[in-house]
Image (cartoon, rainbow, N blue to C red; front, side, top):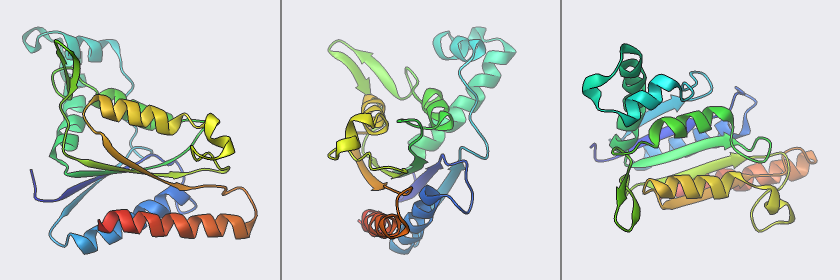
Length: 207
C-alpha cells in the first residue's frame, strides 16, 4: 500500500456542467497539495460503467476458482481489479449526484463488484465482519433540492443511509458527506450552496 493513495470514484454522467465533478476537482486539487507525494487513482464510473452482476459473476464469486468457466474467470478478473484498487487506497472520495432519491446505477454497479465474500467481508460467529478498514471515505453529493438528512426533504434521501450501511458492511465506517444542495433553486441560492460545499470539500481534503 502506498503511503497515501486517493481513489476518486466519479458517478456523474455530466461533463463540464456537473456540480459533483466540480466538487471532486476541488477536493483532488486540495488533497494533492496536502499530499505532494501521494497518488490519485481516478475511476470515472460514468465514462466506463462497471458491468452489472451476471450469472458468470455469481459463479466466480461463490464457487472455487479451480472450476470456473472462462466467463466466470473473465468476470472475476474485472471484479478483482475493482477490489484491488479499493484495497490499495488509503482514502476514497465519491462524487455523485442524487438521482431519484438515491445513487446512480453506475455507482450501484461498482458497489456490487466490490462487495465480495472473502475479499471485502467475511462471516464470523457473531455475524459479518468488514475487511476494508482504516480508510476515510468522503462522499460529495450534488442535488437539485435540499435532501440533507436534517432538513425537511431528508426523508427522501436514500443515498446517504444506503451508502453508510453498505460501506460500513465492508468495514468503511469513517464516512463523511458534503452536500451541494438546492441547485435547481434561484442562482443566488445555488451559488451559495456550491460555495459552501466547495469550502467543506477542501477542508476535508486537507485534513
